[in-house]
Image (tube, rainbow, N blue to C red):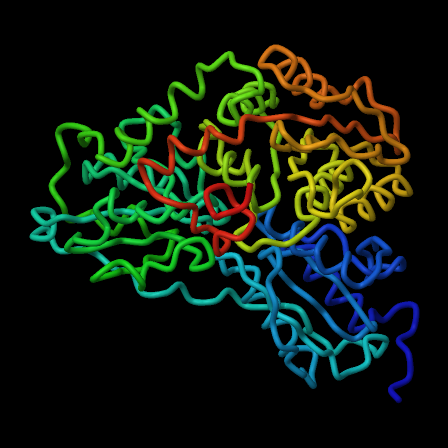
Amino acid sequence: MTPPASAATPTVGERIAEALARLGVRRVHGVATGLGGLPGIAAPDDLALLLADLDGRCGGVPGVALLDPQLLHVSSQPGGRANPETIADPETALLRVHHAAREATPHTIALHLDFDLDAPAPIGFADLAAEADPVVSMLSPDLAQLEVVFIAGPGVVRAGVVDRLHVAAAHAGVPVFNTWGAKGAFRWDSPYHAGTIGLQERDAELAGITNADLVVVVGGDPAELDLRLVAPTVLEVEPAHVDLLVARWAAASDPPARTRFFSEMSAAVTPLYESESSPLSPARAALHLSGAAPRDGVVVADAGVAGFWLARTFPTGIPASMLVPAIAIPGAAVAAALLAGLDDRPCVAVCDAGATDGAPGGLDPRSAELLELASTLGCSIAVQVWEPACNRSAPPVAGSTSTGVVDSAAAHVEASLAAFDRSVRTPGVHRIDRVAFDERAIDRLVEVAGPVTAWGGSGAPGSGDS
């Protein structure tokens, strides 16, 4: 056993914590004592992993959980799993974490730290040199004459290079599709915004991906859309280099024409936005949440019915203002709302009802457990539980207030504005609104783009569930 470090000599654990803090990590989940100077959020292992996943996904830096206490989980992919790698020396562990922080695409690593965190840190430890940038790809000007499709994934937002994507689109005169993890990369009414894809069976066909000469993917996440299954030729581009990709092309004189996908989807969704019907149109509900959110606010939904509607119809021009995980995992929305509460960021969590019959408030057990944890931390969380209008109501959640069932457009506007108003909240007391929506609204979208395929179609509208 290595003798412990003196008060004047930092430990390996302290130096690792310092390096994590320089990368932007603000807390460590799973241990109340934290790591070095990083504060800890005490939670059972399953909740600690989920909170770390969401901490990484909601920001541009990875989330961290420390279990056992020698298992370090570093993640930006909710529901992401990785076989633990045994690391015998601190330098290698730090290099692995540093590499994970530089990776824009959401992912997960797990490191079994087979060394003493309390040992004195070696001289120079944690002073990492910058890694070399990957090779820059530049497309030949001749390719400008071909059918080229651009697709942006969440890596563009996480890397903070949305402005470079704008430069590339305007210079090349190309429309840019996005998966739902990159919503907001362009304003919904930008001529370069071609639509959100990866949610329904015919998205790739309507977007022209299946017969394009070249599909350029920038910061893509295969968990949202695996283009190898539908595209003939795919070029994956480092997000930071997207503007250089088309630098050799002649500058376009005009924005691109609207795509078939955008036109047909817009025609299907617009009446749902404008609907004043009761029960509530889910697209109208997404519109209300977008309008109610302050500029620094975020709406987070679980994968499923509510997640589909937000991923498909949430109008935004602000990157990272709406999040639906790429992998279906219970509790993700409430976990994100808890973290937003710790960061004093306005947030509304949107969940499906009926995940477990008789569960408090219609929530799944993990979400209910996270609400209890949030109460102990003094966070006040706002939740909308979406349910088909035909469903029965569920018993309330202890330690929460409820306004009853919201089933009209006017009532949902009021509820959404109130959900973002933190000035009326009591610490540790949560606001839960039941939102009854029109489950038949999905028929319009299925007619255009087929059944929902995101998250394997499980639990999503048009997948066979009511």
